[in-house]
Length: 86
Image (cartoon, rainbow, N blue to C red; front, side):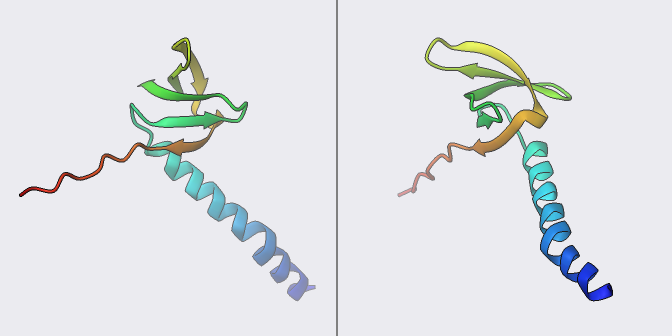
């Protein structure tokens, strides 16, 4: 019985805990200007942050939507290329 529980833990519980920690870290690092995708498939840019929600600007009409942070599934950051100094 113990080996079955160990296999169950390694294959199901441990990966889920890792995904949860990674998602919580992603939500904690949100900042204005990040582009996000919600669970409903809405893509937009963060224009304001609250405790448990974010305000998104959604193209093409620049709609302003408020969604909960828990609805965010992915974040895309526009990394600025570093300018080389001469």
